[in-house]
Length: 390
Image (tube, rainbow, N blue to C red; front, side, top):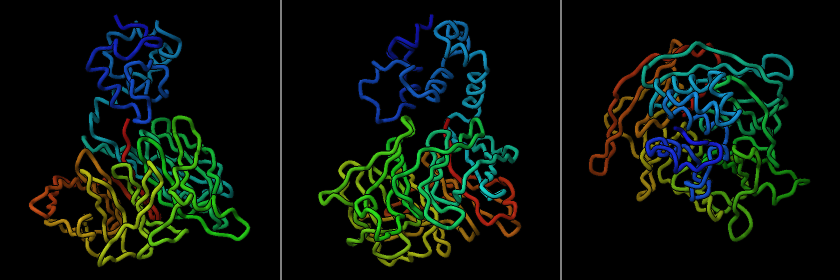
């Protein structure tokens, strides 16, 4: 029998179920994971964990507590099992674009692309009452996408946070940041969202707040101030205090912010708040486009040079060998140790190519394993893409 999961420890579950459960628990949780009861975890994690228990136990699950009974009877558990069986370890890609649909309202259009089956879902749309322009930094945590800051309909910096739940298809507004930000560096470390830079200095504002990093915890739905360095502030590049970023990625507990301007690139340590300059020799700063981390290496797509990787020893970008990447508007997403490249062609079609990356001596070689049509860009100037996990 499945024990009363609401009040017993994970260690009482079958070993394979425990491993699957623990792999979904954020690293921020107490290390004594065996003592965590399922109901102490966020609801989406509970659903993810229960979906890995065989269906033959559903009747027992329904008897444990009202929450579990509701999941079984509503069909949410069956839906999650179906999704997990379909994608296994392959994430879904969510391609989306936004528009102001009417005064005070924004419309989000999205489609999901299953990387295993290479199939696209129908386009869907949803409205939200907000003046925030959602052409802004975005990150995903689990099955949710977070739109951070940006600008409002009057082109002023925004402190807003909009959350898209890809499972329910609903948009909601989250708690606002302390400081309005446009062009911030946003990255996810241990399940938390770190936001730095993007502030516009005004003489009537608190300079200390502008120099702070803000951290959002999706589990508690709260913002807090990130660790600050020994001087009580964050500095960008070679001592600058204000900056906007073109891209940001997380690697080994560090947030790497790539600026619009040479010399402003920043590495922020999320543990102690110290900063150092991300040195890049022979850079083409304004041509930096989308970036991601694959197998502990930072990859970026340059419009004119194609896919490149950052050599931290020589502090330069090096071209990935063996690829022709003369594509238009594009995005890159990490996928199980490989890189998914999405691009828009001259006919406004969006394509996806899966690229395997192999280290050969001191070089990185790329191989296109497959490419597939995803959908149409619908004549909108802005579209983006993020990986989702369930």
